[in-house]
Length: 170
Image (cartoon, rainbow, N blue to C red; front, side, top):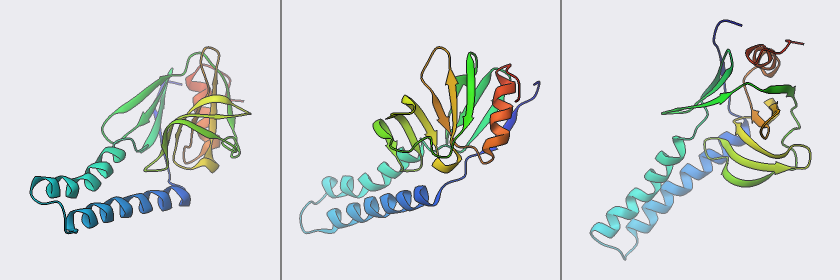
């Protein structure tokens, strides 16, 4: 593999719903707390900013897509790129049920993305960088915990990731 391929990270209905609810709640909380007969001056102004600031910070962690190049997976965020070496990748599994029964250890549970460290019986502790759990692709490494991503076309992504790591396409 000598070129770089980009894959979109489509949002599931659940992610859209969770994000919409979080945005609405944060904006309503800011407006209600600031408009109540209580805080005035700078305190009121700060309360008005809490919701929009929370939305802005959470949006930084959105997963916009994935890019696979020889030896590297890039997870495209809003402002930065998370780079993951693909060597030593051992196995790539397309598994829409991979995230079933997962417990969040630390990270984001659906506000613009599902990201962070999670645990389930099948994978053990793993890193999630997902926008649609039904499109889960599990990357198994020889020297570290699994990483789960959710590209728009999981089967093609799995083949490209294998090639990017120097493995047979299968």
